Length: 101
Image (cartoon, rainbow, N blue to C red; front, side):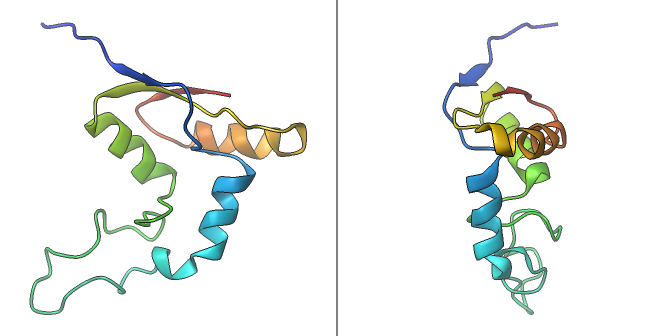
């Protein structure tokens, strides 16, 4: 086995009020059929799931994209008390990477 160091992103907005607001303001980003090209079914969306947008990806895509880039830990820098519960629930739904706020 080979053990390698992973990246740590200390300032990434992966959960919380602003991230959720961006997803709310871009509903077309989360529709399944918008980017699919009929004669080229492999092109289009990065991941073919309703929660995996391109501009404001969902938690599933966020975890996989950070893991593909080599990150192992990601931290939310701007969590206010009124959004704390939602931010922790959203980060808890993010797979593969470790996270904190």
